[in-house]
Amino acid sequence: MRTTGRLAAALIALGLAAGAAPAQAEDRPTLTVYTYDSFVAEWGPGPKIEPLFEAECGCDLDFVGVEDGVALLSRLRLEGARSSADIVLGLDTNLVAEARATGLLASHGLKVEAPMLPGGWDDTTFVPYDWSYFAFVYDSEALKTPPASLHALVEDSDAEILIEDPRTSTPGLGLLLWMKKVYGDGAADAWEALRPRIVTVSTGWSEAYGLFKQGEAPMVFSYTTSPAYHIIAEGTERYKAAIFEEGHYMQVEVAAMLKGSDQPKLARQFLSFLLSDAVQAILPTTNWMYPVIAPKDGLPEAFAAPLDPAKALVYSPDEVAEHRDGWIREWLSAMSR
Image (tube, rainbow, N blue to C red; front, side):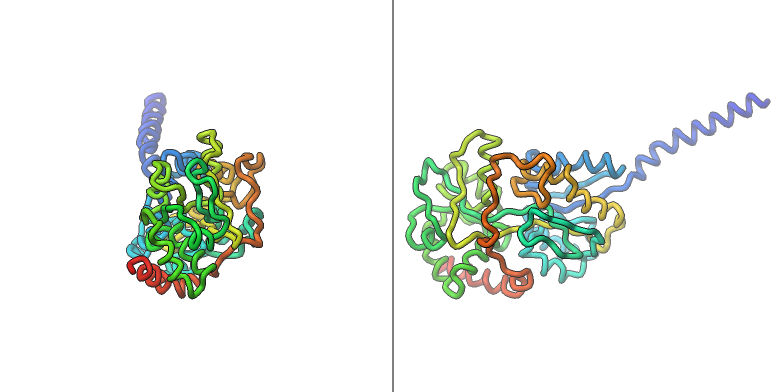
């Protein structure tokens, strides 16, 4: 009887355990991260980051790809408090004021240090994870003498270019702001002068860069760090960044957690994970940007020293939020003349 009782108890325990296992699997929490498409591409950082974080958090990390940072902001606004995202990853500093104004984002509550980031970082909502300067990348076999300044590109060059739409992409917005920073009230005339040599205005960076690699134009709007990809992945120095004497507009990519997240502890853990050496070491050779914290093993040699920070051109997030719509209307008018 005692044996039967023990057996029964053991069977019950086994049954409970057997029943509990799938329940625990089903209960494994999911952290949903909205980001841009290239972050979750096969060659992007997402597939490398996902298993590392899942091993640490005991959760499922679900990346949801959206075309670009501008599209990310639009989706947040559209979904509002009903959004299923816990984290938004891939906005940049030109969009943070508008993203903050949605009222959808929560304080990260972390101590954020970003020693590689020019000017450092001080923001309680957004966590920076990588950065670079925008630049025109050129094919040195197709363009022997690239312009040495934005003025030279606009006024003295005959080089055709590929750019992105500022309404749909963060690089496109970056070029719009760069032109405005250099030309001020003359930006519309500068766009009109440049327009005949713009081969394509793509919705996002990936499309423009793909056309560049197909030889559609000798220059494409990208990043000073883009040539590192060709050196490391393709073993060629054919593609270079044109360095402009006026300075270069800077982009800092950021992540933030949503107030409506039902996984706030996991969300903060993920934001902190973005600043870990494991992630910071992955980003340079997957997202092809500078990390905000130098990896302990250093950066590959292909990542030359960043430009002099004194050459960094930026508008404050509030300035961008105040003028973005008007400057885009100005661009549209100049491009349609």
